[in-house]
Length: 119
Image 1 (cartoon, rainbow, N blue to C red):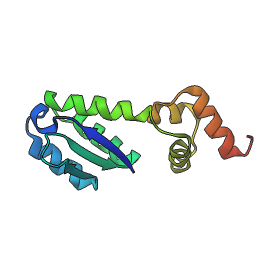
Image 2: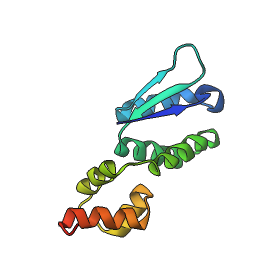
Image 3: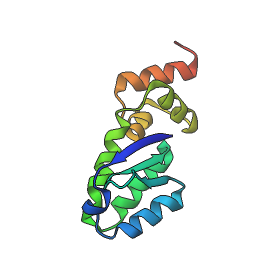
Image 4: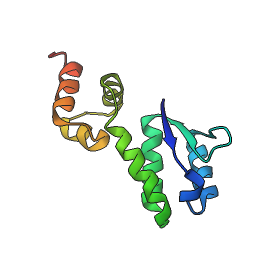
């Protein structure tokens, strides 16, 4: 599970009720930080991908900042998280891993080598 800070979530987002409902339907935890305007999102990689896909499918321009923020979280995936994701992808290749996680080629090759026992 990753914890992602969502600064000024309600102020930046129109139709926030619909977005919050979908995020919670996916199984993510969304909570306000005290009395501030900031929110916390707790989600795993697949849930984050689901949120991004939902935002891109909808025609709400005020939600795109969230998709951009969530995509930037891919770059912060550590080695063990990438390994876990690669285990879940059937017939994983370097190209599939790079496109789905937005990791570097070097990281993807290292993960594939570990999965194949070549490290």
